[in-house]
Structures are given as structure tokens and as C-alpha cells.
Image (tube, rainbow over all chains, first blue to last red; front, side, top):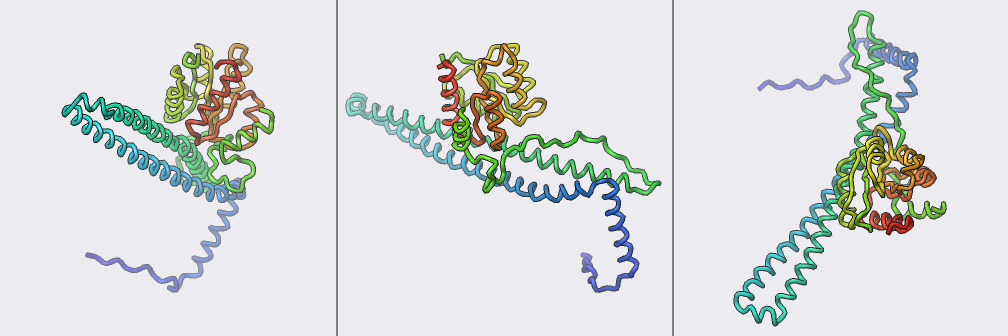
Length: 213
Length: 129
């Protein structure tokens, strides 16, 4: 097997003109960004990237919580289901053995009550499992925003590439995409300390009540 | 009476439409249809009879605010209560929805009890329950 040579140390002598070339390229990039009026946009991206990071963390948290909730509810529903199955077998044996006694001693009635309570609880678990799927909507909105940001950056970089390419280079540009319009904020990924947003339904109700609605 | 009411659930996410419809069904409101955005909702509202609209806000083509405005300026539709169910948690959005005539506002994620309570409250206010 061929061994891989280690990366050359930085201390290896670099021709001085390389530093000069990098300096020139940096200056060119700076001038190009300025010329294209992109400096503000680049600053904007820099501001939006940490936001994208917190949005992705929000997605990870929400999907994790949903999975946890579903698994917990499934465990509880399965336990109740097992209980009903065991009780059904037990009452079956009692009825076969002495049907009159099974009714007279209240075994059948107790069983029916037990089944009714358990099915009610299982239904609640199923409703909670269904509600846990709301993460799809919330994370979907957040994912769309991050994708929009990435598409926006890509489009601007492509524009920069086209405008700064040497005259003889052929650069095929993709069709321009629709302009990103962040009209609505979507889910609030970091509500803590933000006085402009509500953190729960009770705050919505209080706000509306304070306005007389 | 409640069972006969017809609901229109508007949301661009099919998962959420299904959740809201199932919750309404569990609360006894079995008559419900759905639309994926404001445009589709408006078309259904104009072509059929509905008693209640449950709508998201952030949707493509026509968002929930635009749908609400269209409903409230339409003589034939403006009596229909619109309950906003949305992830938009900015106070200015909540105030705007109320000013535009929304009958209620629920922020996602929400519980079954919240939806049940709001629908019931609105129906009582409207004299539909």
C-alpha cells in the first residue's frame, strides 16, 4: 500500500511573489464586490449564517423531541394493549370454567370497565402520536428558509463569478431564480429574550384580550 | 348542530391539514375539506358552503393574511369565522390578524385542547353552538 506523504510544513520557503499574488487576488475580490455592490450582501450573509445554524439546531431539537414523544407514547400504548390482552385471556378462562359465577362475581363487568378505560387511554396516546407529527410543518418551514439562504448565496456568487471571469472564459449561468422574499418570519427558533414574539398560546390569548378581542 | 358544520382546513403542509382534520373529527366536527393555499381555499369557499375556516398564515401563492382579507371583503363570505393556526409568533402578526377580522389565533405547536377550546368559543360567540 502506498503511503501518503505528509503535508509540507508551512515553514517551507514560499516564493515572495505568491504573497503578492494572493494580496492582488484579495484586492481584486474586494474591488469586484464593491463594484458589484455586493459588499452589503456579503455582510448580510455573514449575519444570516449564524441564524441558519440556530435554525438547523432547532430542526434537530424538534425532530428529536418528536421521536422521543412518539416512542414514549408507543411504549405506554403497548403496555395497555398487553394488559387488555392478558385480561381477555384471564376472563375467557373464568367464563369457560363457570360462566354464571364469572358474571355474578362481577368479573365480566370489571373486565368491561377495564377495557373501556384502557381503550380511552390508548386513544389519547394515538392522538398525542398524531400531534407529534406537527414537527413536519414547523421544521419544513425552517428548512425552506435555510435552503432559500443557500440558493441566494449561490446565485450571488455565480453572478460574481460571471462578472469577474476573464474575457475569454465561457461561463454558463443558470436561469435566475425568483428573488428571495422573507415576508413572514416562520417559526421562532430562539424566542428567549425576544420581546417581539410570543412563546406560547397563553401569551397570544393575553395579547388579544389586552386589545379587547 | 355542531356536527353539521362544515370546516375548511387551509395549510400548505398535508401533515398539518390531516392533524387538524383528525382533531376536528375527534371533537365531533366530521364535515371538513382542505386546501393547500389561499388561492385554492378561496376557490372552494366560493364554490361551496362552509361554516368555519381554519387557516395557516405562511403559505405560497396566497398567504393566510391575504386569504383573510379576501374573505372579509367578500359579502358572501365575510360572515365565516376564520381561525388562524400558525407558527408566526410575532406580536405584530397576532395584532394584524385580529385587526383584519380573524376570529381567533393559535400558535403552533398547539394541543388538542387549545384547538377544541378556540373552535368552541368562536362557535358560541357566533351563535352556532
